[in-house]
Length: 295
Ligand code: R5P
Image (tube, rainbow, N blue to C red; front, side):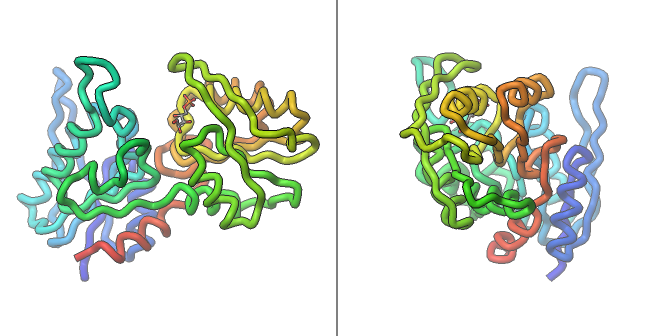
């Protein structure tokens, strides 16, 4: 079956890797920005099965462009369109935490569901929503698990026998357990209390850190505050070496520097969003999921 992967310039590298893994054609989506900020989108002719590759980090403009591209692809011959969004935005706000707040996950999920036949993502940040198919109602979905992604990153380098996997909070339990099982390593999770967007308190479980290599695992790194607080506690607990792996690198250079200063020798992230910390691991995992999903 002929499939085309259409990708925007900011996701072109990832789109190309996915197209190669699938043996699909690759096409560029052209974006023109008008002086007032509006966008004109132009897509190439497509076979009936089309994939649109676009990570939705820094999402506000990208979501509009992605919806416009889906509509244009239907005009150019697509009968089935899958969105491949390795980072799917607006997952955190899955309910109104205070009166009057918009439930962003529901709004964005419905918009995307209205434009695509299927949605594929990596490690969506779901806390209270049971699974990703509830986010995009009525659409086929495929999720690449964080543990598969992070284990793939860790397999690219040597692992010492004294390594222990640590998740920073209870929500990271399936990730820490999954990575540890895949690599036959011990694991634990800390307890986290978030004080503000930038500050968290971490309590480590037990005292088995002395002279060990600790690999912190998480889905997202944003301000870096979570990993920094873990690293401070681990250093106080005598850890010999602290590394971190995460799926989505949403952090900037200043956060990177603060993580280094906190004693994290190496932060490696998956290539779900463009970033200088990435290790290219997601294309074969996405392709395997897509082979099950394509019509
Ligand atoms: C929280 O639930 C997530 O799993 C991450 O721990 C969090 O988003 C990381 O954010 P930051 O880097 O800003 O601490």
